[in-house]
Image (cartoon, rainbow, N blue to C red; front, top):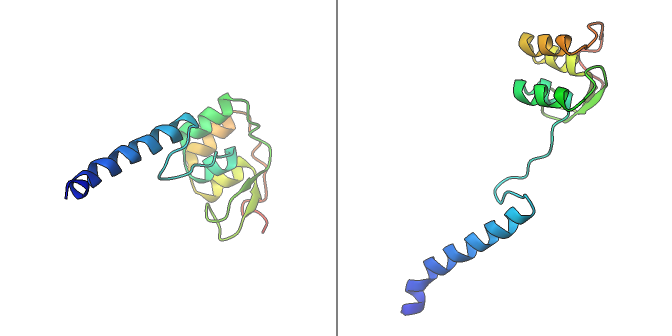
Amino acid sequence: MLLVAMAPAALLALARVVFLVLALWDKHPFWLSEPLNLSEAAALRDRGEVARLLAAGEDPNATYQVRKGFLRDYPAQMTPLAAARAARRDEIVQILLDAGATPYSPDVEGTP
Protein backbone atom coordinates (compact mmCIF):
# COMPACT_ATOMS: atom_id res chain seq x y z
CA MET A 1 0.00 0.00 0.00
CA LEU A 2 2.81 2.38 0.89
CA LEU A 3 4.58 1.62 -2.42
CA VAL A 4 1.45 2.52 -4.37
CA ALA A 5 1.18 5.83 -2.52
CA MET A 6 4.85 6.62 -3.23
CA ALA A 7 4.65 5.83 -6.96
CA PRO A 8 3.54 9.31 -8.14
CA ALA A 9 6.29 11.02 -6.14
CA ALA A 10 8.88 8.55 -7.39
CA LEU A 11 7.81 9.06 -11.01
CA LEU A 12 7.97 12.82 -10.58
CA ALA A 13 11.46 12.58 -9.10
CA LEU A 14 12.58 10.34 -11.96
CA ALA A 15 11.17 12.78 -14.53
CA ARG A 16 13.05 15.65 -12.89
CA VAL A 17 16.31 13.70 -13.02
CA VAL A 18 15.75 12.92 -16.71
CA PHE A 19 15.03 16.60 -17.46
CA LEU A 20 18.16 17.71 -15.62
CA VAL A 21 20.34 15.18 -17.43
CA LEU A 22 18.94 16.27 -20.79
CA ALA A 23 19.54 19.90 -19.86
CA LEU A 24 23.24 19.12 -19.44
CA TRP A 25 23.36 18.38 -23.18
CA ASP A 26 21.03 21.27 -24.10
CA LYS A 27 18.24 18.93 -25.20
CA HIS A 28 14.56 19.50 -24.60
CA PRO A 29 12.61 16.39 -23.64
CA PHE A 30 9.42 17.27 -25.55
CA TRP A 31 10.68 18.47 -28.90
CA LEU A 32 13.85 18.54 -30.91
CA SER A 33 14.64 21.75 -32.70
CA GLU A 34 16.81 21.86 -35.76
CA PRO A 35 18.52 25.14 -36.54
CA LEU A 36 17.05 27.17 -39.38
CA ASN A 37 19.04 28.49 -42.28
CA LEU A 38 18.37 31.97 -43.66
CA SER A 39 15.97 30.80 -46.38
CA GLU A 40 13.95 28.72 -43.92
CA ALA A 41 13.72 31.62 -41.48
CA ALA A 42 12.49 33.84 -44.33
CA ALA A 43 9.98 31.18 -45.38
CA LEU A 44 8.68 30.88 -41.81
CA ARG A 45 8.31 34.67 -41.53
CA ASP A 46 10.63 34.77 -38.53
CA ARG A 47 12.00 38.32 -38.51
CA GLY A 48 14.04 37.79 -35.37
CA GLU A 49 15.78 34.70 -36.69
CA VAL A 50 16.42 36.40 -40.06
CA ALA A 51 18.03 39.34 -38.25
CA ARG A 52 20.06 37.03 -36.00
CA LEU A 53 21.36 34.97 -38.93
CA LEU A 54 22.26 38.09 -40.90
CA ALA A 55 24.11 39.49 -37.87
CA ALA A 56 25.95 36.16 -37.59
CA GLY A 57 27.25 36.63 -41.13
CA GLU A 58 24.91 34.49 -43.24
CA ASP A 59 24.96 35.43 -46.93
CA PRO A 60 21.61 36.92 -48.07
CA ASN A 61 22.46 35.97 -51.68
CA ALA A 62 23.34 32.32 -51.07
CA THR A 63 21.04 29.45 -51.96
CA TYR A 64 19.91 27.27 -49.06
CA GLN A 65 17.86 24.09 -48.78
CA VAL A 66 14.31 24.78 -47.60
CA ARG A 67 12.89 21.66 -46.00
CA LYS A 68 9.73 19.98 -47.18
CA GLY A 69 6.60 21.52 -45.70
CA PHE A 70 8.01 25.00 -45.09
CA LEU A 71 6.70 26.42 -48.37
CA ARG A 72 6.06 23.46 -50.63
CA ASP A 73 5.34 19.75 -50.42
CA TYR A 74 8.91 19.07 -51.51
CA PRO A 75 12.33 20.38 -50.47
CA ALA A 76 13.60 23.29 -52.55
CA GLN A 77 16.82 25.21 -53.07
CA MET A 78 16.00 28.90 -52.65
CA THR A 79 17.64 32.18 -51.86
CA PRO A 80 16.32 33.90 -48.73
CA LEU A 81 14.75 36.60 -50.90
CA ALA A 82 12.93 34.02 -53.03
CA ALA A 83 11.69 32.27 -49.89
CA ALA A 84 10.41 35.55 -48.43
CA ARG A 85 8.67 36.38 -51.72
CA ALA A 86 7.10 32.92 -51.85
CA ALA A 87 5.83 33.41 -48.29
CA ARG A 88 4.48 36.84 -49.34
CA ARG A 89 6.24 38.72 -46.55
CA ASP A 90 7.25 42.18 -47.66
CA GLU A 91 8.88 43.05 -44.33
CA ILE A 92 11.25 40.07 -44.62
CA VAL A 93 12.00 41.05 -48.22
CA GLN A 94 12.87 44.55 -47.05
CA ILE A 95 15.14 43.26 -44.27
CA LEU A 96 16.99 41.11 -46.80
CA LEU A 97 17.29 43.95 -49.32
CA ASP A 98 18.66 46.20 -46.59
CA ALA A 99 21.21 43.48 -45.79
CA GLY A 100 22.44 43.43 -49.40
CA ALA A 101 20.31 40.77 -51.08
CA THR A 102 20.14 41.20 -54.82
CA PRO A 103 16.56 41.52 -56.09
CA TYR A 104 16.99 39.71 -59.40
CA SER A 105 16.24 36.14 -58.28
CA PRO A 106 13.92 34.64 -60.94
CA ASP A 107 13.41 31.33 -59.11
CA VAL A 108 10.66 32.11 -56.61
CA GLU A 109 9.19 28.62 -56.68
CA GLY A 110 12.39 26.71 -56.05
CA THR A 111 13.29 23.43 -57.67
CA PRO A 112 12.00 20.03 -56.62
